[in-house]
Image (cartoon, rainbow, N blue to C red; front, side, top):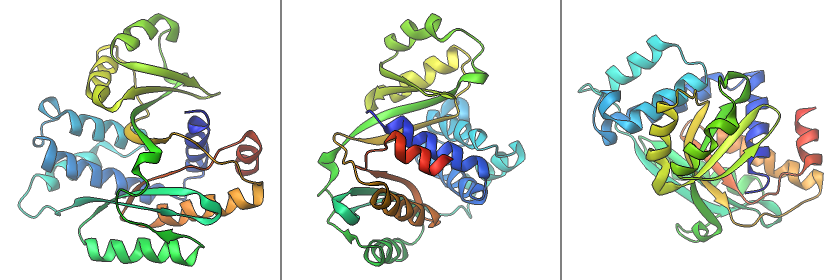
Length: 251
């Protein structure tokens, strides 16, 4: 998992510029819609997936009224019908890329993702061709400045709830679980009154590739192009995020 928190740190720091706020809201609204449709209805007390979606929406500073409107719309007769689709391929320099989407038009999304790959030195592969390169994990991000207790005092409780590994950066603590323990960890953090910046099932690369800065920047630019697409929810990759690359992006 080394380097994964560095990539998350890039995203959080870039998010602070906030040119992507509209995209973040769109992504959060789609997550809420899918959670209501597939997770068990509009009541967050009875729908753990919706509770996580609401927490993620709050993590990107979505107003409470906007969240409530999204829940109401998702539970109505005129709700958008989204489906989850994923794509696998290679970017330049042999970097594997896994793209998760939420879409109401799969044909449009396939064409868009294929175009982004082909126009940026990559190629779209067949589903399942790269899945073995990633491990499915629950990943929880906690902002240190919002942690009201000493983290060491709750570590044991988090391990009992399924925490496999902790990583820390200057601003965040990341908790990793097996994907089957995602719900258990969500409930534990809620019980402990720990505010979570984001909680997601992510695909963690089993191995990463280090590239020279100029080539690595090509990959980051490609990832940005994917993330600018309205249908894209998450992008995972096998690029190693080095300290040098991190500095070049965040300085």
